[in-house]
Each structure stands twice: as C-alpha cells, then as structure tokens.
Image (cartoon, rainbow, N blue to C red):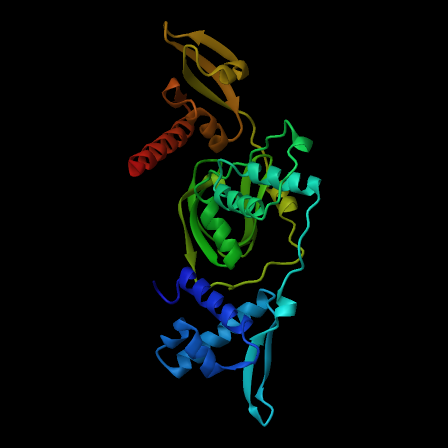
Length: 327
C-alpha cells in the first residue's frame, strides 16, 4: 500500500489519534514517531516533519481537539502533543421513538443504491447497541433513492476530499467534451443526480448531470486543493441550468405485450406485423429517454433518431460488459 494512498493516510491518522488520545502526558514528536508505525517508515527527519505537520492540520480541520503543550516545565523548549479526551468524547446519545423511525426510514431509502452498505452498517450499529426503532409510525412509506449512475461514487469521493476531477461529458445534443471540475455539491433534484462546482476550463461555476458523464471520473492533484463557497446554493444552480428542449420525435418498434408506458405516450401507433408495433413518440431529453428505453431490453428497438439509438446501445453494451465482468 502506497504511503500516500487514501487508505494508508486514513490508517496513519487513526493511529495518531489513538496514540494521542490515550496518553496522560503530552508526547514529543520523537515519541510519536516511535509510536505510530507509518512515521517510522519516513525516509528522513524532514519527510517525517512534513508528514506530521500535514497530519496535525488535518486533525484540526476535522475538529479533533489537538493540544500543543510543554513536555517538561523545566525544559520549556520541547513541545508535546495530546488530545483532550473530555473535549473529544461525544455526550451519550438518546433517540426518541420517532427519531429512530426516521433513521430506519433513511437506511431503507438507500437500498439498491451505492450507499446501501454504509446505511445498513449504521443501522446495525444501532441495533447492536440494543436500540430498537419504532416501525409503526412509518407504515407504508418505502422511499428509494437511486445512485445507479457509474459516476456517483467517484464524484462523491472527490467532493469529500475536495479534489479536482476530469471527465467526458455528453451534452443534450449528443456532442462530447472533456471537462475539469472542482466539485462543490452532489445533489438529487427531481430524481436525477447532479454535480455543481467550478469548471476550470470555462473559468465559471457549472452544473453537470451525472447520467451524462461518459466513462471514468479521474481525480487530479492533491486533496484539499480548493474551498467550497459558503454561499453556494446547489438547487438554485441546478434549476438555472435546466433548460428543456422542444419535444423531439422518435420512432420505435415495440414488441407485442411490452412497453405499455411508451404506448400510452405515443402520438400514433401502427401494427408492423404480429410481433411488433411501430409508435411515434416525443421526448425532450435524450439521455433520460435512453435510460427508459434500455430498461425494456430487446423488447424496444429505436429506429430514429440516430443519437437516441446510439445512447440506448451504449447502455445495453455497458450492462453486458458489467455482467461479463461479474461472471
């Protein structure tokens, strides 16, 4: 594991917190270097000093009460460090029945999504502590938040680390361009996920729909490379970016007994043969409509237009490749 990898850094910070949390006396830098294994692997004293200074700043940014104190009153030139356990510890938490019900509801919200694992883990911790939630107050509520967009995990992680990302983005007209972004927020609006932030190539704030991100989201540069404006309003930015196109016509072939939602929206329908029906239907967003059509698999075929057909083919090929990888 590389010393600069996120996992190695997390382990080092955790070891540092444990070291400073369970000492009654402030520890000197040399004592800390001996106690934290990752510091002992530093190539030089200078490398250790730089690593330790960065880690101190990061702990303070996380709100951890790191104290710098004199190690020995008789020798005031040596500084030591410790974490005040009284300031670090959280008060005992108590949940009312309705609050526990909401926590349970929140965990169910993320089922079938990329955040399902953390949500379930949090709920198990409550149950392990013998905390029972009241399900009766929320009978019949089964919300779902989809985060199925492949770009969601990488974009969320970049936002948390405040790391610049680069990705290919497909516009509503089908054209693709490379973008570099400093993510400020990842937000769900009307069932769709968006990332808002500062576009380095346009030198201005921009909003991107995650469903239109093509391929991998690549992180660039160091973590903590920028600050998120305090006054950033993600929903206002998203609403300002959503300009619906005029309805566009499409021609589809739909297998008999399938695509009932599409048939209800169709302007005209006509039988092709005993298996297929041709429908004329309008849509405004290529990517969203492609998602809907791809969900029908081979039961719906796009004849026109070409950009809609290509968008559906991309989704079906991607699904096939992911299934092959899982075999």
